[in-house]
Length: 214
Image 1: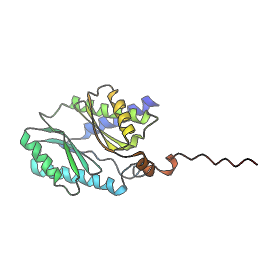
Image 2: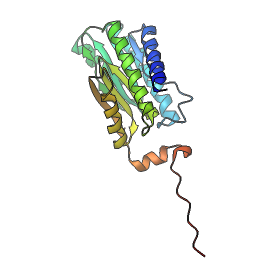
Image 3: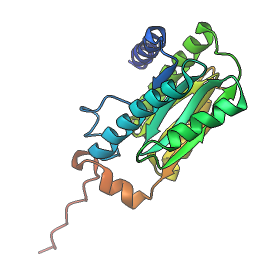
């Protein structure tokens, strides 16, 4: 089962890379079925999608195809990955995204270099698929709490998680073949807040009271 899930996720990630021709890519997950398990509110998920779409359109208007930018928003925190031809364009991308409505913060991980080959991008997609599969396979994690992005062997983890979950996911990601570095862009929450976010079916059931001896 683990091998099947890993293969399925890797294939889906690779298909997304092979099918993407635009230089600006949005990283939002499909809203709908994920609303029930995502730790963001439904409104926050929709807002993240709007940020990604608006940001992509504004970068295309401002810089055309000079840059290749992947925009990933989680709880209004935006991760920028990809390439820019120079420092000026890198800063310009960040300025454009920072001006998008409701963006809370921007992590600019653009590098100044040529666009990577299809082979490199395919490798990154496969790594992302393997990391996601490994998170799913972990019995002590909620895999849907994490968003995973990989660029040139660096894997980025985003999400709202406890410190234990952050450390555990980092350990898992580092063990995946092909991952050279793990960068955490995580919002750390308390165990108490996690319990409030969990659906009722996932909350531990308190033990039944023992009746007094007669």
